[in-house]
Image (cartoon, rainbow, N blue to C red):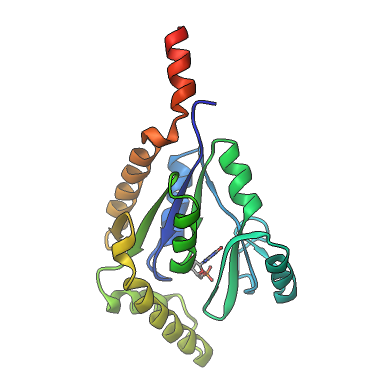
Length: 208
Ligand code: 5GP
């Protein structure tokens, strides 16, 4: 196989548009695959088990931690989220490009474990006020929702403090422009020499 696998890490505050941008990426690239995380949070309307997440109980999650199934896991907004070894290693071995939508703790761990084949992209809004507006727009205005928005905004602040260590920054104010930037980054990432099995490529080249 001339092409080796790679990991694209998308991180950024909840409400910045990561999921919508991700959907666009799958329309644009048929060789990019979504890494399905495990989570203990409840599915939202329209979310499908095994497609958006593997929805599991806290007990099952803790068991997976003990059995060493995760390459990384974190507690985000009071729920557990984790990426399994199987998800990453099977796909990479098949030369696939994996897209991970994970938080800053996960990004740090994945970058440490796979420095040679990963790139990290931070997606955010131009202002904090815009993020709040988007979070409010998708909430149903209950007290619980208001608390959740405040929790997510506090987490967003912590995440914003990590931007500098990311490879790329996308400010998602204009969706089409943000999408175009993301597509460009992924094209560039795919063409890195590190994504080619150079020995195999040069051997074939010499033999040809
Ligand atoms: P949500 O509940 O909105 O789907 O996700 C909440 C946060 O958890 C998001 O920032 C998302 O990127 C992050 N997240 C989702 N899956 C994982 C994972 O496997 N590991 C880590 N560290 N974060 C995750």
